Length: 277
Image 1 (cartoon, one colour):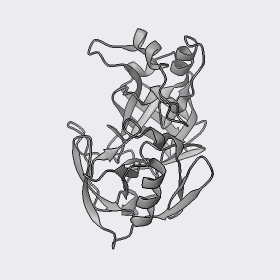
Image 2 (cartoon, rainbow, N blue to C red):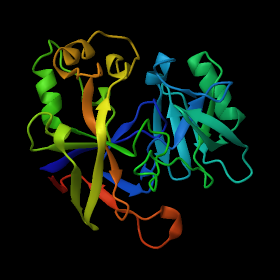
Image 3 (cartoon, rainbow, N blue to C red):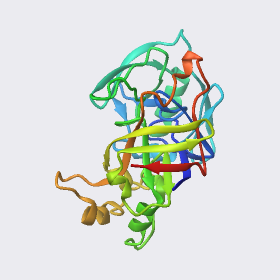
């Protein structure tokens, strides 16, 4: 098995992009879901609420993030510094401290989405432990775990059942793996990627229960019956949830915090060999 695709999503629930490499730190993929939109109550906002978010592309830059709409209009936003306002925001059931990205970003995004929002970013005070028994590990603004992996065979199996195939972007993974059977990831316990930095081990924390976002077109936000209707016909488990993909967390010794300077971050590349158990 090998890594056949890698994805970055710099701002939670905005468009992301393919990547040739995926550097990691203790929060997951560097520059992945390190920014998030919040409303006037400091609650996180996603495409589930504002479908037009699907029309905005986010690209990490050397010192921040670039946002672009479908017409090519863009804004460059710098990483908030120590002088930026630190506010408590909520992502799902977690209250975390994040840095406000400023009025220019808030005005541009609010105008694009026709709804009042602000952009926040992770800073050095950010702290969001995973649930026990992995509370020694951290996650950024991602829903439930630092990384998400899906096998290419699982998507191929789904597309073989659809009248019109869908892209992997519907499911917003970080890692795509080729060379296994469809839905083999359901049973994985650990995943080892043989990187240039040496073998790196990841815990498979739990299968990914899907919300309504795979039913939204990844570039327009338009709601569609597929692929969730077909997935529900054969991937709905006893708890009533539809599952597609596996959540990952680096083993406690797999990566070192980027801020410590003890070592360079681990980086996953396309073509890296993968072993599972």
